[in-house]
Length: 225
Image (tube, rainbow, N blue to C red):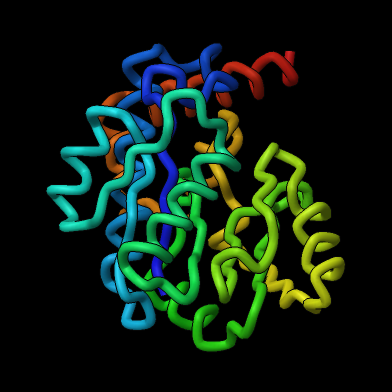
């Protein structure tokens, strides 16, 4: 069983946070979240290995720091295509019999969470986001059991694809997997739930956490007036 962590261009990451974070802050946030996710994966007993799927320069440093495999997708590949190519690489080159796709923006996950989910996995396991719209984890054995969607609203299409393939998917809600970071409220939730993560540490040291608190105070003061 191999984990695949796709990473898109860091300079373009988390555009929905552009109103509250600068481009450099968003890049640093993405790196901190990726470190949290990779750190959790690399401690899992149930995983054979971890593959970073990315063409970015930052992926080289992350792969070296965490001693993971690295795969460069074709230049024009979108996310589903990237995952398909990475999955085929793992199957062909490293004889993977299963894959676990995890985005790099779920910094709450822990090795215990991942090993528990993998221990109960059979053919297709899906973990939705907090709104049951996106897929924050997909596990498939064999890797090509269902096609990849991952368009922001992929949870139902992944469920439908599993049933179309004659597979009843295991759907496992998970609080730690459910929080993916896209908005300022997500950052606040992370700070409240996991203050010791690398992501939370970055938010505090960079001053972003204080800015978020000040914004909350200003909003509360406005309501009082």
